[in-house]
Structure formats: C-alpha cells, structure tokens
Image (cartoon, rainbow over all chains, first blue to last red; front, top):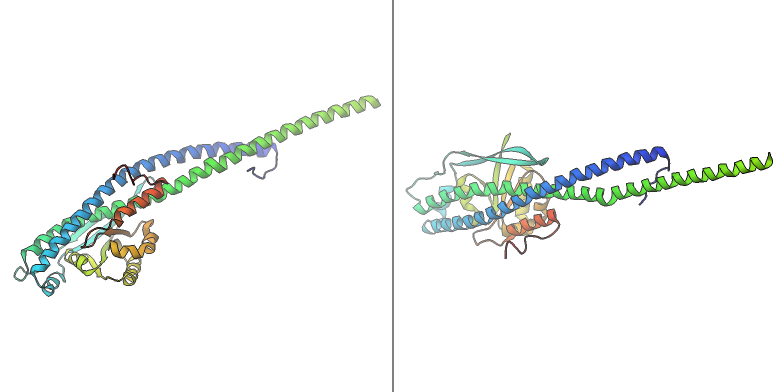
Length: 207
Length: 110
C-alpha cells in the first residue's frame, strides 16, 4: 500500500532515510530474534528435563509421606508438622537476559526441618521430610526456569511481530512509495520539458 | 532486594507435607475456593505458587493472567495420585507460542 504523502523531492529524501533506518532496524531485530530463540530452546530443553525430574521426585516424596502417615495417626502427623520450625523464604532480585527482565530467586532457609519430638513420630516421617526438602529446592529452580521461559516466549512473540511488521508492511510500503514519487517526479520533468518545447515553438512561429 | 513467600495450593493429602518445610499451605479441593486463594496470593507477597494439576485445570484463566508477568511464578505440580501431564503440556504451549509451531510433539518425545 502506498503511503499518502506529497510527491515532492523533499518527501522522497525523507522516505529514503526512513527506509534505510527501517532496513537497519529489521536486521537488528532479526538478530535479536535469532538469539532469543537460541536461548529459549536451550532453556526449554533444561526445563523439560527438570520438570520430569521434579515430578518423579515429588511423586516419591508423596509416597514416602503417605507411608509415614500410615504408621501414625492423622492427628499426630498434623500435630507434628503444624508448627514448622523451618521457614522457607525467597530472595527475589532481577536480572536482564536479552533485555527481558527475569526474576532470580534465592532460597533463604530459616531454622531446621526438625520441629517435633522424636517420641511420637515414626522414622519414616523424618526421612520423607528430609527428602521433600531436597525436592523443594529443585522445584523452586524449576519455578524460576519456567518463569524465565514464559517471559522469553513473550518477548520472542513480540519481536517476531515487529520483524514481520517491518519486513512485510513498512519496508514494502516505503519501497513502493519511493518508486511512486520517483516516477511522478520524472513524469513531471518530462511534461515540463515538452511544454517548454511547445511554448518555444509557438513563440518562434509568432515571431 | 526483598524476600517473598512460597505457597502451595492443593488437596490436603498432597500438600500437607509441605507445611513441615516452611511453605505456606492452602489445602482445598474446590476449584472455586482455590480461585479465591490464588487471587489473594497473586495480590500478596508470593513469588512462587505451586498448584496441583487437577486444581490448575480449572484455573487456566487466572494462571494465564500472570504467566507473562515477572512475578509470581505459578508452577503446576502433580498431586499424590500422580502426574496428569498438564505441566509438560504447558511447556509445549509456551513453545508453540514462541516458535509458532508445535515442535515438541514428535521428535524428542517419540
């Protein structure tokens, strides 16, 4: 589609400048997209591995907890763990990856996992909780990686839109408009020339 | 740099054990209740929210809303009955959005 501009030499110069910038921007964005994609694919690979691992470990943790519960009464289990001695918090900071702000999480562990007396609880509970602690560490890493993955995906989509807008809309429009103005200008030039020649003829005939 | 909390939403059998490791636990089996909890947690100071897969299936809309914000990170976990594969499915969805094609469906998995 041709842009609606006046067919003047000034407009032509302006459009040529815009075209140069658009081409440069397109190249840069394309490079950015390629790099984002590379990072993204690497991340996806590791996230898939991590997720499979976490799911497997969580399953095992649930099972061992179930085992622990089966040897103790529900009330005792709830009593044992309802006042946790351990507090898990996350220190969240930000990092820039390809100009995308992604959260970086660092676990802060306060206190110990042992929060109950040994007298009333079974050894299975100790084991299962110890196990769970390890799984949680992994799951939090997974949380961070999945979030990064989502944010990168969003950025990739945005970049792709921009690249496509430049490649398939703006640049072709500019090229077409520039051609239109060039044609128009040379057409004007020609018509002017022929008019002058005709006037010259008329003047000569009269004189 | 500030510290944030971790939360777990899910049926009681699955999430009770998380309580011992110092994570905020919100036991529920109802999707509607889970939705209320989730909305509250998103507004609150939580960086990571784990949700069991069966509950998350009914909360797709809420989860998608925060998916592309820096925080919180909502992560699906299997419940005590095993994985439904929803979590892995989500990864595939994200890849599809980014690449524009479902490149994980065969090849690597098959």
